[in-house]
Length: 276
Image (cartoon, rainbow, N blue to C red):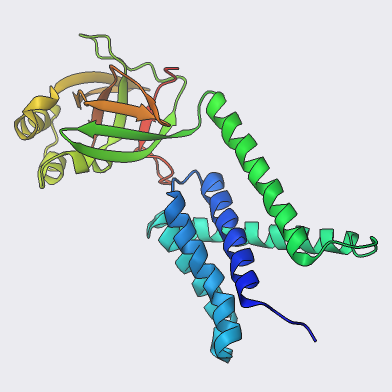
């Protein structure tokens, strides 16, 4: 007779689900807070415990299992277009993790004093943590990639992902300061209510500048010219009180507002240069 301890089941599943969500976030280049991931992992850990405690057949249905996984992804990454893709990656990583676990357990079956399932799972999770740390450090040290950006202005804060484009050399021609281009929605928490809608309603950069400067006069708005392949335009840009990329302060960087989408996939909503 197999004895299952609920506390061990919850702890093991909590750790496994947390690492699976963390791997999904890294693969999909989605930022998610650690507490948010832990809360959603707790939901996943409580699910098998509920099956054992309440003995409800409906909880064991495949559709319910899929729904719980999708709910975990929606809670961890938000309900957006990319959530479905993140859920697919989450299940793919889960299948790979489970297959590797079964394979390793089979290889260890003939070993004298073989490891328990919990010990094997712990070893796999520790290996996953090590791999994630190595990948994270490599990504930070290499040029390019998606970075986490925090912008502060007037006591308010906006956080979003930015793609580091090594070919992005946009600068303010007057001051010579580097310029980060961000989608308007990404920095809208910094502005008074209704400012974003008003800026979207204007097509000319001059009109956008007038509205933005009136809403936030302390931000020092100015127009910054930029050029893409075969075209050019002007963007309203402001001087933030503080701008950080992956926790590192980047003094003297301006933030330009774009009413157009920067990334179709939603993995990032801004473009930065390689300013390290």
